[in-house]
Amino acid sequence: MRGGRLPVWGAAAVVLAGVTGCSLLGPDETPPEPTTAGPTSSEQPSGRPTIPPQLLECGDPAGKSGADGGTDGDDPVELTDAHVASGASWDVPAGYESASGYYDDLDYEQRMFMHTYVPSAPGYHTLDLVGVLGYDGLDWGQLAQECGQVPLDAMLERVAEYQELLDSEPLDEAELTEVGGLPAVTQTMRIPSYDFRGYWLFSQTELLFIGCQWTSESARAEVEASCADLVSTVQVG
Image (cartoon, rainbow, N blue to C red; front, side):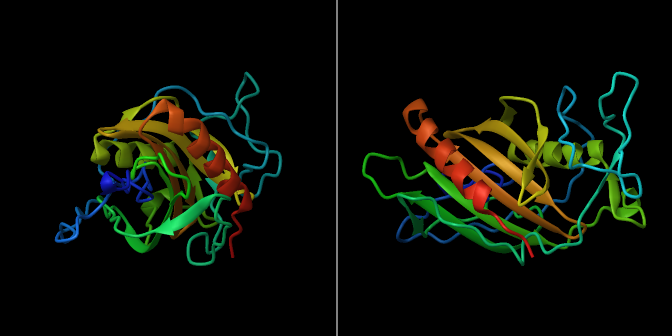
């Protein structure tokens, strides 16, 4: 969100900040036409992601491990058919309030909703915020198997494609975590005006994006802590 823009969304838009760009509108401004672009890049984040034990292969509760005991990036992850966006709920972080005037810079998927929350206390920039975005219409194409599996690298590659569309700079390696008890990708990125941490929770057809962005190191600790609080309350249908 920049001046009203969420990253990736730009804000959840703040992907929220990682998926797209979110910007703040002036009183006489109207949102620009969104840039609609599907994933096209083949670039992937460097390094090997860490994988929690909950990420199991379809039909193989033990999962697949490489010679070193780790999970190979080509191993598939079973994507849930749960309504991770349309059926999602979460709690607004304490000390935050809903804010309007932001828009999704990169409508990379079919957006269903966008919610932005800003600190109630004074002294924060308008781009210091937490955002939640929901998308549907995802298509994994031939990558999806009958049981809803896709390679881990495919999930990381899709986040890398969002990153390229935002022209953002990764500040750490993408890795797998959990949101709502399901596998999700998280990464910290930088675009002009602010940094953000994004959480991408994919299903077979939907995406829930949580973006937490800050414009200064002084705001970072507050935003990241509040973002973690929100993520911990997410439930999906």
